Image (cartoon, rainbow, N blue to C red; front, side, top):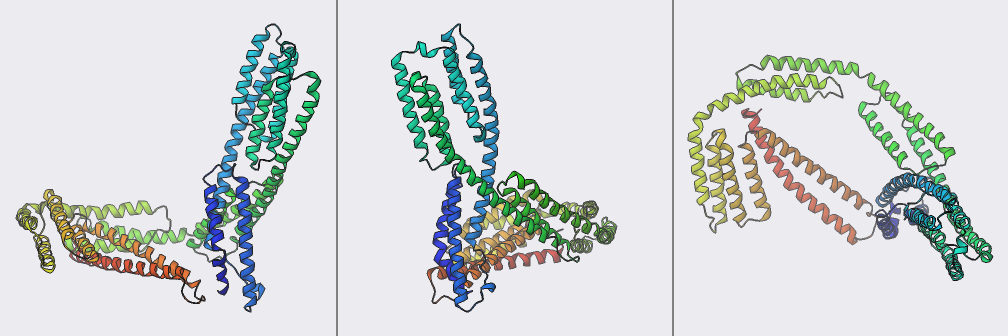
Length: 587
């Protein structure tokens, strides 16, 4: 579409914002909350500008505004995932902090109660002061409490401390210069409290309030004639500071309103999943189940909402989910008839396999059982819970035959000593071979030795791994020494690997797994090629080729080269599989 040029205009800024968000995610979620919100607003601002510019271009080029579509780009989806990750981290941080704060509140209330009891002591002032100092130290070492409880508990603590000093007539025991010094220190603390209002990080501001309040309480009494005015100044500054903190939490409330809108959107998406055709397949039901499970995860990761909205929204969402899963249950109950038909087919295959399990016609029966196994695979269970029991019977019958076949051929090993001697002779020739300057001659010699080694036939099982490993490891070593190009060397070593598979006890399984692995690699390469082609489609309307387009084209060519190598290897593996299947030498 012609308006995708906007992607280039705004990509750099959006990439920078994503990088900043990723950095913030490595820090404490609570400490970076303000930064994350600011970054989110900036990103939305960039996206809106990008959207409007693309929309205007679309209209300028003759498009109709109502027909304009502008899907999210890869970086937009990346930003959304990072925000979801932050919301989860923030929620976990808040829950952990709340639990710790509740425990700390209990400790602080116990300290206050002890100070109140202590203030009644009058016989030993020195001991009372010492005990108070211990309680003050314990108060400092106790962690934070909920912001909603902090002001009250701190005020109660302050009141208890003040009561203690007044009740025990501490002021009469302090010298005049100590009172003056305390006054100066508390005046300085008032200025420190005032400086908190310049701190941008609200968590840091709350932390400083707690630290400074503890310091304030530790300073001790001041002259009575100055206390009231000093206390009034202190309370004024504290009120201003708490007003700023309250403003922050008002912003949190606004955020909860935004979260409520997001949850309503999730409910709407879930409701849309209820409206689909009665002829939907099991796969479609499973796809929609994955979608609704994703919505449930998204619901959990969405931030908190207000108490008045929480129960109502959750009830709506839960009702939609319950209806969906009830409909799904009714659908799958109708699959019982299909399961019954499939069981009948598999019971027939089991009867055929059990009838052949004691056969000694190794070749013909082996082929027949392999065909029955293939027929079994053509009839998937579709989720039938009876499938494991049926498969156990079928596999037991097959294993009975193939185990007997294996035992039969193992008894033939007595005649394999001559083959062992032949293979060891070929191995001796391979060990003494020194590559010459003629690479073609070297290649032919190694191929001939490999052919002779394979043609020597089967050897006793106790010697099989030893002689095979010695031969093929030496063969790989010689390939490494030869001056071949990388592609040719890798292919020869791969052929050596396949020959080793063919000579093993479980050759067919090894070849099957190798073919599946190569197929998976080819699918991944094709997927990357499609992605690169789609990316190129975004720039088809651009004049000339920019560096980004050239880079993508180079990546496509590199992936196609890899795909060609994997296709050649898989073809070789399939050829060997076919040979083994036709000879029926494996199960």
